[in-house]
Image (cartoon, one colour):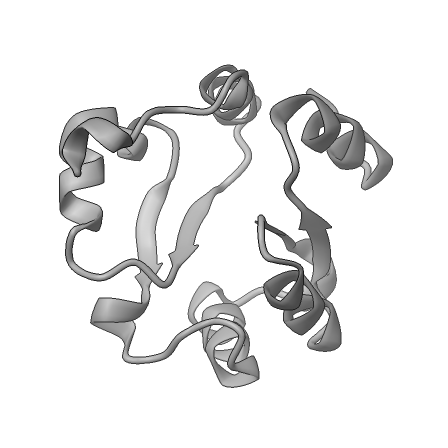
Length: 121
């Protein structure tokens, strides 16, 4: 299972660029405890915090209350956040609570979507 995880083309470079530009990033994931295995292999925490894992938070996407708790925890306005996910229903749930939602297809398209959302990298 561990061997099955790797960065998709362009994703690590994009994360690095966002981090270098001081964008605050958090994992918001439905992964079970094996997110720790992913961290061990990919060192994702070099770029973002594993802050919102459903296995420790007790809620799962697309539950709107999970998104609202994230906003409360961060102490931010929904309009100041961008949520990125490969599942459209999770993106739609984010937009319903006022967060900008971007549907991940690949790193190149995500970079275009981020630019369209006002993120300069």
